[in-house]
Length: 449
Image 1 (cartoon, rainbow, N blue to C red):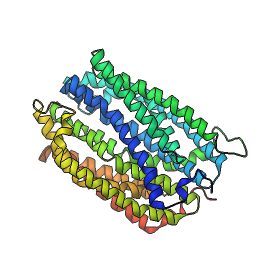
Image 2 (image 1 turned 90 degrees about the vertical axis):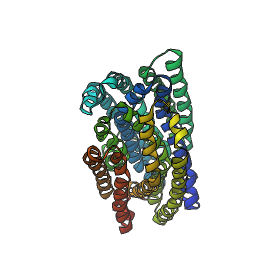
Image 3 (image 1 turned 60 degrees about the vertical axis):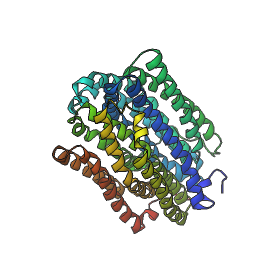
């Protein structure tokens, strides 16, 4: 067994946990990276600026999740080639999807630059924050290819079992982003345009460094023949997994976007509180999503190596990891929501925003275990290539969330928007778990020794 293949040997639980941990920490830094804009403009510019970034966040986060989901889905094939010790094909897979996502991200950036004013209008963005929201998005989309490529590169590092490299890069880029945010807003007196420019610069630096490091890492894997730079059959195989993975990763963000109009009807103060709450929810679910993504790579490598029993052992242990994280997060949401929300706003002068954010966090804190169980179960299905039911489950999740929020919030209030969240998570988990129990995923490996 090649020494680089750490996920196919040793105790399954230990392998999974120590592989997941850097991914979780890396995703936390990515959320801090994304949250810095909201914290800094909320504290130093004002409530309207926070609401403007929040109105933009639901839209931008969809693109972030498309990048993460596409990278993870495409890297399943890379992981399975690694598990099977087929290094030439592994490199071909990496090169093929780097080129594909470079082209896709450029097209999405052009789409965002062209249509974001229309989308913000369609979402009913309050007039007092509309111009700032449009400005933030225009600048953000200029840097979208950098953000996209960084996330795809990070997924490839994880697929190769090197989850510590993206963590180090994210720490660096997060600190750089925060420093630039402060310089732009406090030093130069800029508003939402300053934090957008800071984000673009930090993402650009991260993407370039990540690319150079990945090219160096790939040279350490011996290949008998020169790999192809682009291979259509590899693209088609990876796309079968990438598309459902994009849907799964994007469910939360698409749900936020589609329910944005429901939030907007309650005014900019409620939107500011909702923005703070959903940003903090995004941080809280990181351990759950990170464990699920680690489970995907763990499954792919072990199925490629012909060891499905290790997948089952790792899956059982993942429940303990999720339960421990969920308990800690519940305690934080119930007892420490005030100091957490205070990072975003002056709670004394933003009463409506504070009450909205507090109600959101205190409710959702009881249900994080559901998204964790869903994420690890989805991880097994995605890592094996068994994606049909997995995609349906996530679409049902999205449909439930949007339907309940849009139908019920005008009748019973804004709280119905977050009441819908655990309902969608629970339905998704039940569908995916029933599929896992059939054992069909064992037979779906795309690559074998």
